[in-house]
Image (cartoon, rainbow, N blue to C red; front, side, top):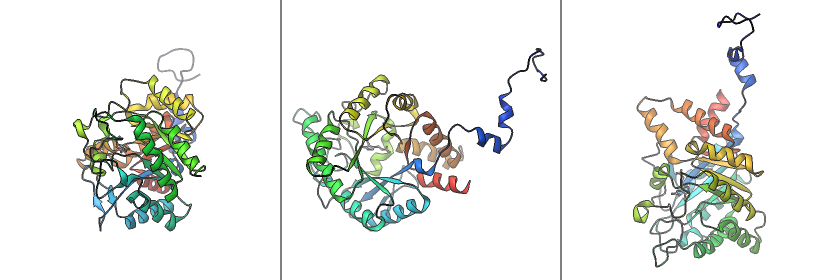
Length: 335
Ligand code: PBG
């Protein structure tokens, strides 16, 4: 009979028995984070000679093509399987033409990465217009001032082909336009890029946590940065399942929930509902909060990175896009 602190005559459950040593805890851990789960988001900027630090994201840089290739080699050495690439062009226009120009910065960088590292790293290309367009919205703005959905997805089809041609394994449309996945799939297939996969940012919420990203890609959005006309309302949970189902029906090979930490309920629902890989994006603001608190000595940076990314995996993410990817890979390797 157990020594029962409540004085009852039956043994009490003692879950602490399995927490006694590190080896016991490791044996019963339900979630194991692996380097294979990680995807590093990276920025490449046109027309700079040296990497430029991003003030609101300490430790993250706008890369030159050369420094990006170095970063990619580091990922390969650490065993991180994938990078998602964002281009920052030197000049913008009203069509966002840099996004599909074969000599646009993302395409130039994709070719350089492919030449340097072959197939040892999965190259994912963010597919959007905001970095390339003067007003900073994710699509073409019509005369009414609204983002024109159907005109925009035509351009997305062109961007997808330019990125596939430059060597992207996966294109990742992040603009939340209706029908974007179907349009991109058919554009890719028409041009013979049948093997290029689509990672859809399916459940992407209009979020304050993208703030630092706008520094990272030099974007200021017209009408106070309001994207609520196309990104999801954070009050909604069921709606994410509808967005995900539509994207899969349109041909998405993988889907994403974004941001991650404030949306673990959504992530868990999506994981239970679908059979394709589900990614989650720990976005710039999530990174910046941890960095800011750690710089003040209020929180331990590595421990916070590990706890949040493990929580995102526990909630159901198969892949995690995180600015901590190389830090976590090092922690996993060195213990
Ligand atoms: C849009 C895009 C955004 C992010 C990724 N793709 C910004 C937005 O929708 O406003 C945010 C990523 C981050 O915050 O880390 N191209």
